[in-house]
Image (cartoon, rainbow, N blue to C red; front, side):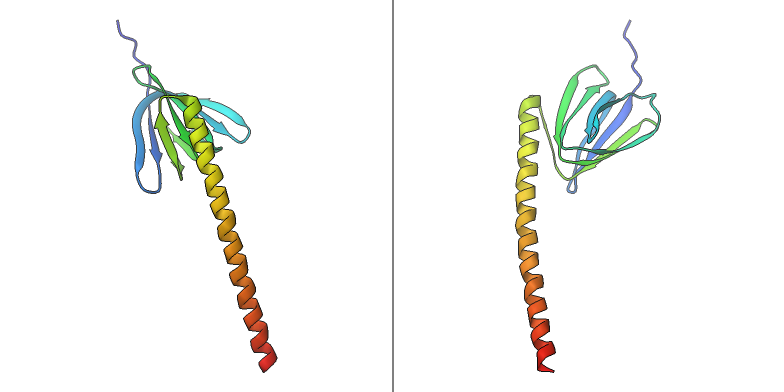
Length: 136
């Protein structure tokens, strides 16, 4: 006799696409204060997710992983939705973790560069504003 497992619906949403929409029996995710596990009968839940691995067990008992950037997880009833900027699916947890941490590092470097450009623009505007004030 086949075991019937209670299910949740896991949906992972990126800015440009729905990466995953699958029936699952268990989800293990990482928050800033550590990992946690969700099952279908758990209470409704909201959490900010840290960059790292999300593991889930499909309705037929297969364990899978997703490497994710930071995001937000919302469990409402049997629906679990995750919104994140970037996520990668694959078979090797170590490769996924390395890929997502590398992407997060590159994004941080890009954002630091953008903040530097913005600071120079602001300084230029302030300088021109002071020059206009002196001309009055």
